[in-house]
Length: 246
Length: 322
Ligand SMILES: Nc1ncnc2c1ncn2[C@@H]1O[C@H](COP(=O)(O)OP(=O)(O)OP(=O)(O)O)[C@@H](O)[C@H]1O
Ligand SMILES: [Mg+2]
Image (cartoon, rainbow over all chains, first blue to last red):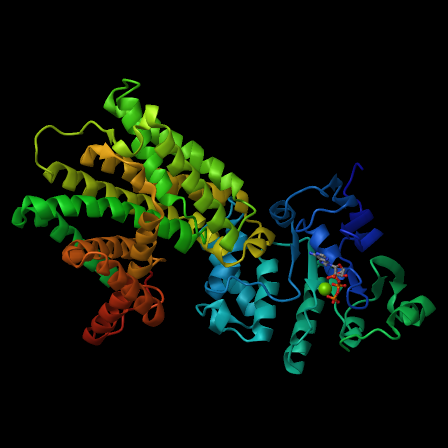
């Protein structure tokens, strides 16, 4: 590919097997720059495993992950992060005995070209955006569940991400904060961030995305316009009889 | 601005006391003090490895043994000059430290502890078994560093090594590496997802702390004049851990103070025989129960509170991270 084109991220034939469990099977999809994709599916359908693979946290059993023209399927996680593929975790994984500010500075300083003063300045900017400025010097473990989700989002933003993968940012969040997080995601997307949004809260997802991809038992069963996909009989079948959070 | 924090003050005062102490002490306590510096080096470097970076290695005293034996053998059997022997031993510890660091990359918590414990025991048993080289339990004679009978030069050498090690380690921790090590301790996966090359920093911290442990062992060997494999027995590792934990496992100067206090205490209580270990265990339990971060941070916060009470006008420019 001579130019970056619009298709800057693509996954082809991606699989992950845990022993006999086919957590993800032959998954392919592409993302255009600036796009926001909802990824849904019943519990255990392979959403988190997919995020783990496309951020280098898990080595795929097979398939390719192409980021701006180079296959990164066998790259370590920190290189994905350095390339701007950032993620949050389904259950927040903060640096608990470090301050909120320090949590944000770590990803910034992982780029050796960035100076500490610049990192701190950017961190304060992110805290202001997330309305967490007053907590800058608190230990991360002192934060409420919702605040922890916000801080994790902030930590991902400090990587100046080209692709942001959010694993259930709405789960267990107080309704008031839910609105806030939705607004943050919308505004990030408006600013040109490419986002993959995993959640069980279909209502919240619909308010943010136009395209949604559905997984069931490790496989992609639908991909397209939200309204159409949710009418899709395969999707309805995958969801009926399956417990979901919302 | 001359606004030194309590930590700085207390460290400066303690350093002056340590410098003047030999003037008022007999040879026995100077000897004890010189050994205390050996433990201080081990406890402080272990505090960096375990307290800061979260790598609970049990191989630390084995690195002291490695350094001590390597330097002794190079200077003795191999006929190297002392400086060359010492440098060779340090380089060897760096290489083995990197190797162990790489081997335990995927291990954490109890697995790391067990693995390093096994490595340490294997190494100690090798020292016992390879009598032709190490003279086993008979002990390996080690040439001294200074002429004369006095322990005072060793006391000051030990003190200098402790100060240098603290300066070097604090220097490292003041860079972004300090932040990365804490992030790795808190959550390695999250650190990786934040772009931190965790492999590199874990190996780095093993190399740095192994080298300091080896320097401690080199110092100890040349000072005492004889080395036995008992330098690396498990109770020695336990003692180092107790020192670091009692002093404050996340504070390097705290670990130094813990080492000195615990070692002096154990010498003072020598007449109680094995009972002193019971007392030590009790102290450890009490610290764990009532001051989880060790005694040093407690002293520090007491000092800070007194300072704050004295300061009539609050200082401008936010909290200092002294
Ligand atoms: N490390 C692992 N070892 C073994 N099996 C795993 C592992 N991680 C995930 N699995 C299995 O892979 C399948 C997919 O799990 P995954 O966490 O990706 O689902 P998910 O779509 O994120 O579900 P949820 O909505 O509950 O978060 C499940 O059957 C799960 O039990
Ligand atoms: Mg999941």
